[in-house]
Amino acid sequence: MTTILVDQDLCNRCGICSVVCPVAVVTPADENTLPAVNDAVAGICIRCGHCEVSCPTQALLLNDRPDEKVLLPGGAGTISSWDMASYLRKRRSVRHFTKDSVSKETILEILDIARYAPSGGNGQPVQWIVVHDPEKVKNIAGLTVAWMKTLQDTGHPMSGYIPTLLRAWDSGRDVICRGAPHLLFAHIPEGNPVASVDAIIALTHVDIAAPAFGIGTCWAGFVAMAAASSEPLRKEIGIPAGRKCAYAMMFGHPQYKIYGIPRRKPLEVTWQ
Image 1 (cartoon, rainbow, N blue to C red):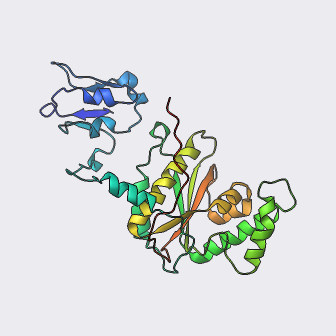
Image 2: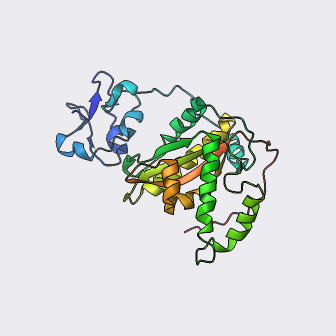
Image 3: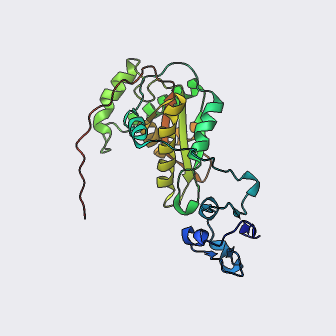
């Protein structure tokens, strides 16, 4: 299959497509030929789309689901540095949620944004499990507590925190999922050495995008740790065979609004 399709009437032979190709498989055009990917190196193409989206005349089309090409309207996605800084600085981990469910349509919109997170070699290894049923979230929290109990009086780094957490749980406080109505799991192939980083990047995209939809998030560290070693929890979550949980995130509608930006440690930078 031809890797790229080029409209000879639109191509101005600027050479940008070959320059931006991260694996250098696009041969530049000259007076007599158009940009191309030779069959001998076509297998190296990672389908990242840099060539297509960097073409100033829209002459080039990556031949990978070409009917799904989306043009970027002028000015789309433009945001001032002040707005970006304010948006990111006010982002908070949410630990108090309303009981209102987040619609599946909204969740899919957020996850669709996370599809565009970078991944090693454009491998896109991350898949998602959304626990939408609040009762199942409670079951997962309970199984996480059961896993914690096995860590008591062991050398596990969590061991010292377990008694306090268990007392809180036994008193009726959900210190595991914080009463969140939903959980999100990013799962990746076992044995992929870079997929865990890809998953964290994708989850960060979710974390950043969610507030724009009125959704609050919190990284579910206890659940993620338990999912890595508890087989009953793995089964409850429904992680497919051959894959593993990379991390988990709780989410829902925040109960409280944010009115300020908290302090942080001074910036420390070493220039080389």
